[in-house]
Image (cartoon, rainbow, N blue to C red):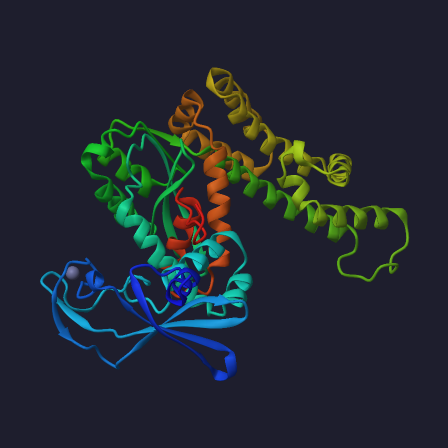
Length: 430
Ligand SMILES: [Zn+2]
């Protein structure tokens, strides 16, 4: 094998000629000088159209970071002339080994994008020796390339529209998930009717007219726009959200019960300051309630032995909290049943909530009645929310990982690469 082909294979570079290879910085860095083959030269960096040359570029030769060779860092070095594109004006000429405006080779970008969708923030930054904001720039580039050749909004019939908080201080994304594939298909910063309007702009009237079901959390700013832009679509209440309303109510009852148990136990007095079984029992109750948060939130089939015991204890020591728990579980059961059975169960549930003497659940009952049409639509059409719920959870996880990206579009790109159904492959593999 000729040395030239060897280096091209190692760097994953095609359509280029290797001119020189030098070791730099005491053998810690390899610099490979290359030039594009004749047919690749003089092309616009953005549209690759063949253009008139403009100049030899600003700042002479340029370097692109490539994938490490073992522990040695690799740079590709070349001229960076500019061309005059009739569409894009004066731009840096296309190079076959890197994306436009990138400081890294295509393979480097691809590996970072793959890692970002698979592993932790610190693993990516340490392994690739780059800053997290550089990861943000890379995932945006890679995602833009996918977007350029992909129509994510093709063939949509049943979608869920939702909001995800990505930073403290009222920063939200509006996201659209395909109920049928489970893929994230659209996301933009904002949480208002205008943002939902932009989704429908991207979709276009023809495809909006083919939507059959739209699920949302019942927020008026979503349903109003849907009713205007896709009047034929059945608006459903996302079961995931309705159950989460009940979980919020349950949590409030839990806090009240915990405070009451603490007061009964003598507030903040140190252990042993008060003798007697009543004290100890209350203290035990307060602790159990404090620790029972997960037990109360979890689905009964997922409970550990310990959590089952916690619930049993709550049933004895705090009947009101236990009633709240059963109300939450009851509502979840309604959506499991679905159809007319589900509707019937919901009627019983509403009556139960109304006479529960737990104020937050009385209010929840009223709230559910306000959204009854949408909830009945959900029960009728059997809209399963398992995928939406999974996507929702994963988007929230990604927003936490992506914390530190200054730009919400980097977060969106990472979410799209991870959940959009077009995961970047590892370079050199299929
Ligand atoms: Zn161009």
